[in-house]
Length: 72
Image 1: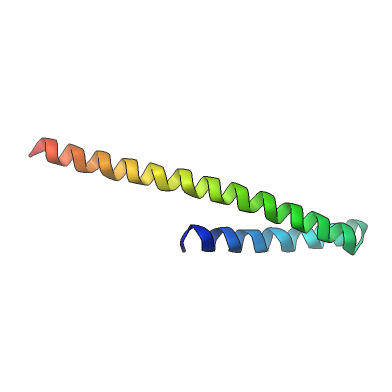
Image 2: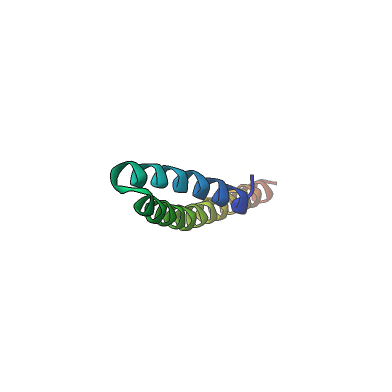
């Protein structure tokens, strides 16, 4: 999955969990607020972490390529 798909899926699961917990503890309005908050936080965290891991992978691949070229 790409970055956007991963973010959407994670946000959906976070909303579902937040909604269920909020609904069970304090009613459906609290569930919607908790689910929305969880989805937004999850989206931001997933987007940032995915981006950091993507950059690390690119740097690692570039380093490996540079070492291979230097060895030749």
